[in-house]
Amino acid sequence: MTLDVSAVVKEYIWKMLSDCSGGMKAFILDDFTINIVSVVFSQTELLQAEVFLVERLQHIPLKKLQHFKAVCFVRPTMKNCEKLCEHLKRHIYGEYFLFFSHLVQENLLQKIAASDEYEVVRQVQELYASFVPVDPSLFSLEISFGMNYSPSDKSLRATDRVVEGISSLLLSLKWKPAIRFQRSSSRCRHVAEEIHRLAYIQEPGLFDFRQNVGDNQLIVLDRMEDPVTPLLSQWTYQAMVHEILGIKNNKVQLRHSLNGEKDIVLASSNDSFYQENMFSNYGDLGLAVKQLVDNFQAISKMNKQIESIDDMHRFIESFPEFRHQSGSVAKHVNLISELSKIINEKSLMTVSRAEQEVVCGSDRVLAFDLVMDLLADNKILPFECLKLALLFILRYGGHGNKQVDEVMTALTLRNLDQLSLNLVRNFGKVVGSTINTECLFWNRNFFSRASKLVGDLKGAENGKKFEKLSQFCFEVE
Image 1 (cartoon, rainbow, N blue to C red):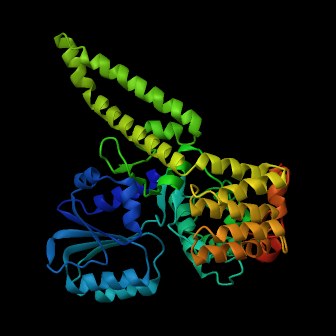
Image 2: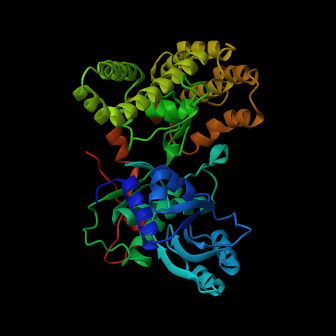
Image 3: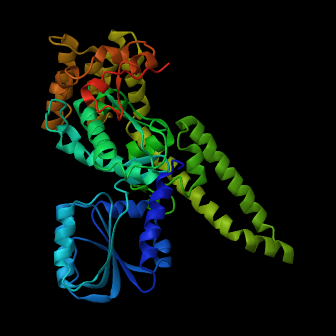
């Protein structure tokens, strides 16, 4: 199957809604699945499927709505199961069609069955979509470790959600991949072993897609292996919007807008300009937006020249496309205008030049002077100062380093909260104990490093243990 996670999830949702065709429907979602539906389905499409009510599972109506059929799409958790049981006991809706985003444990099914006193459950099915499809080739699990993420934490329970999301993705794409993981990361090992156990031992029939093992590869890497990239300013369209404005479920909120529109949808599936330019850098993006505006102005000028019946007919036929293009032009002009204002207000270009000097330059004194100048500049926001300090500590940090001490002293004058200051104080120790930071800045070939990074995890016919299988190194030529 082609890698298009948005299309797969959309097909699943159509299946849910079509399985209970006929009559008005209430779409019941939990806090996670409502995000899944919102990025792939529009309100118009929901109405076409006869969905007239969308409710969160946690909200149970006071009045009975038995003229509605309830289509429930939720994660198979104990909390959600208890809410479903409450729904069934109170017989809120006329019929219930239950769809779970991953494998359901038998004890949860038994609990639901015991609560169906009115025998209103018409269908129970697993549809594997425990992830949010941001783009055709990108998905999110909506997990954030925040500043509490500690690589020394021995608890691996947080990775169970990762296993659920990735395994549901594999099932939805009908993939049974060879699994490789970063050998130095206990989290990566745990995720890889759990997915392997599920696909090859617990549910081999479920993952039997009549394909050779190894046709697809699943590579599990730890984000902590590269702490530098997230600290650098981003200058491609999608990354800029996400970092500067924030993208949540393909929606962006603007502070200022030329046409008064504050919330806009930014999705490559229905925006050709965004699809073509989402990875364009800031300079090329400006030229592309100018070309978009010029093309629209040419079409607009042509539409004003209506002198005959044929011209009127041509205008009416092209009006939907004209209106769509008008909205696209306004949206991207608004976005670029907002980005430009914030970049100038926060002096992000100046900050980015300092970041590049710290990370890529070889002159330590110059990098130190740039960082200290910006830390003393009140125009630079505290958050940008925090990132600069972390980058400098990563590159030049060390115990008893006088320059690092001076950076820390300057940073304490920028009114940072205590949590951020503690992060800076412990950053070198936490990262240094996990990876060799010197390797991040050496001029080494990436592939030679990758060959030592990734271990291999495969299903072995003779049942050898993971410890022996993981000794194999994935060689990248």
